[in-house]
Image (cartoon, rainbow, N blue to C red; front, side, top):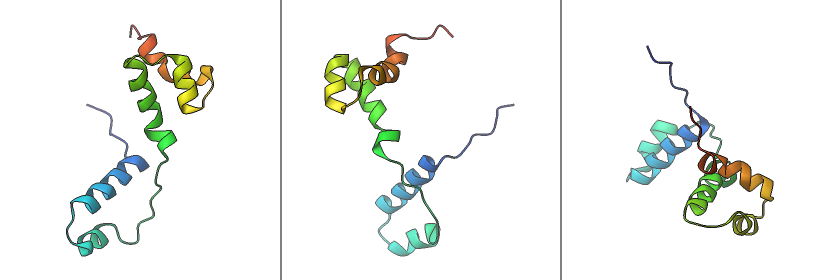
Length: 89
């Protein structure tokens, strides 16, 4: 028996985004999501770290990433840790 999955604010945002993008009728969007309160996640908390990891995999150095994203080397090391030091478990 698997644990129930949790729906995050990001999941809700993606659903709304897809609904708006794929809908040719604003009434459909309003019927589905009208009156809802949505938190729109920031780039920093959703995609930035993924972009940093991809750039690291493509060969950018820690120092280049630090300058590109205006972060400390420690922050870059923390973000890229999973691809630099794969877990044995």
